[in-house]
Image (cartoon, rainbow, N blue to C red; front, side):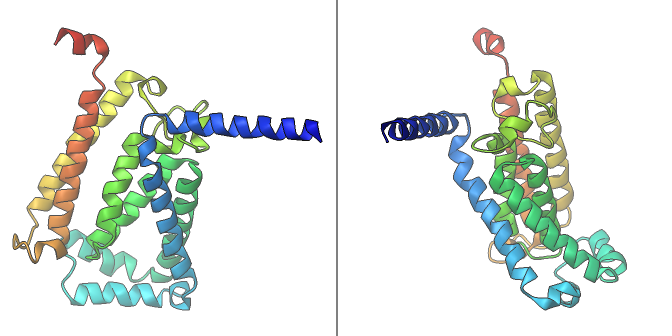
Length: 250
């Protein structure tokens, strides 16, 4: 009995030390947001899989047709994409969306290939905004960019183990400068900042209204703000990667 007690105490102590170590890592404050996003994707999957209309594509097709008829799709290339690709493939596309939400939610919650899951989530949110449905995708977009840059999948997540074998941060989350090749991270963040700025400029050219009461429903305005914020966030993270020698001499 005493041996069992000692063993239990040892296990408790190990768990306590593990969680204390994990929660002291850089970016651990973002962990609640990771759990929120993971549960959000799983909730969206559960809602759709329970609706038979998603299984045969009728719900998705009706939604896309309503978006087109209501002139909610502001980008010409995306209107053509809906008409020529999405509507004819609605049954298949519906299952792709459901499976994507299931995989994204599960991976983000477990911290398993987190960055790949976040990129998949960002891609889905981007498409939801492009089709003229910005709520709640706009909020998900901002949170997932922060989670991607912060490497939260390596905090109480399986990416902490996978990251030892998989180098690229496009698939697994990595925390801290030492876990990245310094120049690789620097170039990636600067590239992300430039790309996001260019996308923000493109979206700005398609903004329909600057009215404060209406612009929150304008996908082009929302994407302009989101890409602008993403560019700023990536650029600030890039500046923070300057080596200590640079910081001391400046």
